Image (cartoon, rainbow, N blue to C red; front, side, top):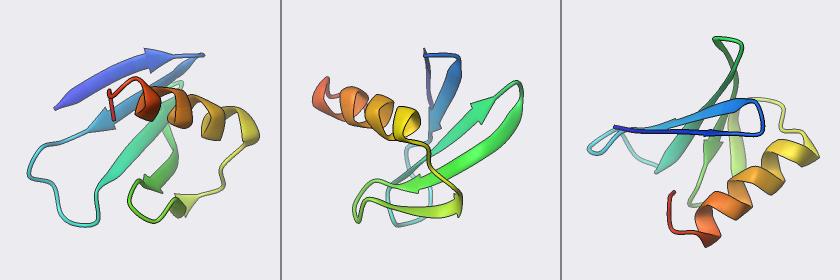
Length: 64
């Protein structure tokens, strides 16, 4: 499991989790977004521009 904190959000991924490759995004302990990293689309929740920017940064850094 990878747990990353950035911009007031917690980003969680699990190795061996079901396909497609995705990240769970939490704020204040509540799931706000489940994001498909392969197709760049939401699986649950509605993405904000800020969260999408943070996901992009984490992907560029090789953390997601």
